[in-house]
Length: 218
Picture 1 (cartoon, rainbow, N blue to C red):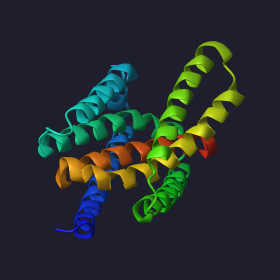
Picture 2: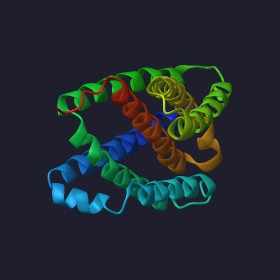
Picture 3: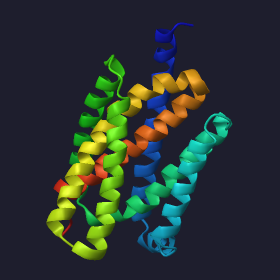
Picture 4: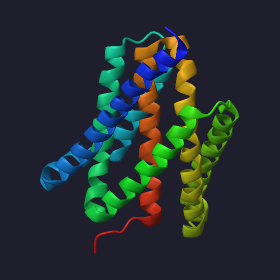
C-alpha cells in the first residue's frame, strides 16, 4: 500500500473520531444544562479532580501510544470527551447560545483552513510545532503569574490572543505530523491519537475565541 492510499484511509478515520469527540463533548455539556440540579451535583466534586483525570488520560495516551490497544485508546478518548463536556456545561449556562454557535462556526472554519494547509503542505512543520510548544509553556507560566501576582485583564487578553495563534499553529502541525506517526504506530492508533490531538486544538481554540468574542448572558 503506497503512502497516498494510506493517507486516504487515515484522514477520514481521524476526522471521524474528531467529530465523535466534539459531538460527545458538546452534547453531554448541553444535556447537563437541561437538568441544573444534576449539573450542580456533578460539578460539586470540583473542577480540579476532572482536570487531573484529563491530564492522566492525556499522559497515558502519550506514554503508552505505541503499545496501547486501539480499543483502549478509543475508550479513553471518549471518557476524556465526556469529562470535558461536564466542564463545558458551565459555558452553556454563562454564554448565549447564539454566541456559542457563532464562535463554533468561526472555530470550525479556521480549523478547516489550517487542517487543509497541514494536509497539503510539503514543508516540514516540526519547527513550528517546537515554537508552539515553547509559546504554550510561556502562556501557562504567564497565566499563573497573572493570576497570582499581576492580576491584569490586559495581560490576560494578550495571553488569550497568543493562545489563539498557538493553537492555530498546532492544527497545521498535528495534521501534518500524523502522516509520519502512522509509519511508527500504525494507522488505527495514529487515527485515534491524531483525532485526540486535533480535538485538544479545536477545544482550546474555541475556548479562547469565546473568551475574546463570546457574549455572556445578562
